[in-house]
Amino acid sequence: MKKYFWLILTVFIALPTISIAQWSYLPTIPGPIDLEELARPTYKIAATQPVVSEEEAVIKTYENLLPSVVSILITEKVSNDLGEVSLQETGGGTGFFISSDGYIITNKHVVLEKNVNYTVITNTNKEYVGSVLARDPLFDIAIMKIEGTGFKPAKLGDSDKIRIAQSVIAIGNVLTEFKNSVTRGIISGVGRTITASGSNITETIEGAIQTDASINPGNSGGPLVNLNGEVIGINTAIYRSGEALGFALPINLAKDALAKFKKYGEIKRTFLGVRYIMLNRYLSFANKLPVQEGAYVLKEIPSGEPTIIPDGPAEAAGIKPGDVILEVNGQKLSAMNSLSTAISKYDPDVQITLKVLRSGTEYTLKATLGERTAE
Image 1 (tube, rainbow, N blue to C red):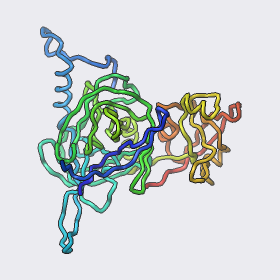
Image 2: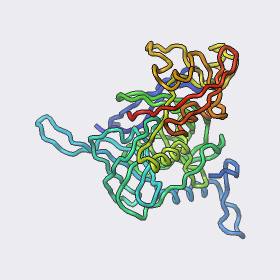
Image 3: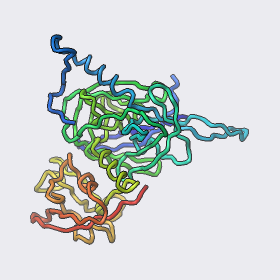
Image 4: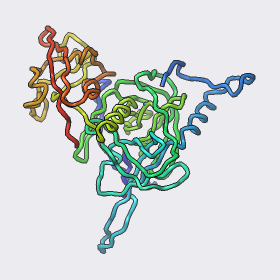
């Protein structure tokens, strides 16, 4: 049975930025740099010719990016009822080159399994053995490598500068059957928070990009691209029960992961040791809080586990349940700059300054970040 690696948002709570998701493994079908221009940039063929349509711009973007996009196939040893073992294709996803010497970005959930074989297929149908070099312990990001040179790296944009309603395209390996499929749409929203769980792993994506470009099974790990040809997101999740609801991980998170990988040979991430939600006006009202932005440290959770991790950096810093963390080193926290995103920019053992609201009074606390262990 093939596993089409993707995330499905199965339930939306009645709060616009909170949703619950679930990993899904579907059977075979039976029957996120400088966006100075507006949402729909135009391109001139020549000085004496008229400006071409957005359709032509989409085609140009697709054709330029296609050599950078790869399909990822998963094969593993499978036994039949007679005990005979064969190598079978069991799933797949998408990725894209970030260097000419074969480094690739994809979703972590695409390459989560360790005792399988990964085959990377380029747009010219050349096959390579893929190796997983690093899996991000915090975000749904992984770095792969194939041997060779002369590959075309994708141009990475700046996901902090995306604009709602700007045009985008998504390219991916749909159902592991239809390679290099392209869909188009717009940016429908930014700063979304979704949580995915399953297969002994839980992923929370904060600051996710919402798009109405069709994201299909097998698209996971593929690029979400603006019409300047820049990757601004990594296609990650869809909402199965609704139409035109896809989500991408901001590319700036991947760029930060790459920087850490180059520095350490692995993707090191920090942790503070609190369980929290990012506030909006609905959550602020529900919890009777005087502010509408910040990271609200939960007083309790259904599992009964502590919301301040014992012996963690937050406990040592004096953070308490019910606190609202407003700033990290002077940077305000919001849906676009969540607590996990803000602290992920720093290295373990770095001391940060937190502005905290407690019972109507603001406090300044110092915390030394810990290192998040790999999952």
